[in-house]
Length: 240
Image (cartoon, rainbow, N blue to C red; front, side, top):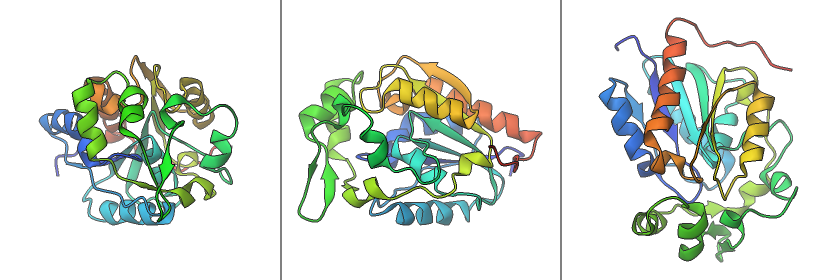
């Protein structure tokens, strides 16, 4: 232990932990202990259980950062998030109690990055390669986008209708990195999440995979969150 928080990174749908590689390298170079586990994406409960499993292995207060659906996973920690010092959302979902991903996506036209998903016979949702590269991974070299698509983690369709419980962001300090050129989660929706959370906000001119295309800015916000918690314990005051 070096007095700094540990950092746990949570990947989103159609991704895996390797998407955080650039961010991991930068944070490790700064002396942080970083973990970026794989999530099954078979149900929100399974994903939250995996996050708790990883958090139980941490030896000091921990900053949890989530990208896209990864924000949904860490929000699902609820009011029982021992040892978590803060939450960093990167172009990520941050639902409130009772809300669903389906409900959010039904509020307007589907963004291009989610418009052509397909579901297999086992009820898992996949991204077509061309749509993934063009929209979901917009702003990233197409060759790199194809590599990311090849490693995509399928997403259980049932997760879309699962209601959020008490959100973790109501009892933990939060930060939010808005990707202003996002074609999967509209930037205005990201800003609404951040405002509702009372999060500290930064913006980056990036597509949805800002953790890949802009690792410097992503690592910087996570570092800011970590540094802010060194001298101050995590707040447990519930936001209204």
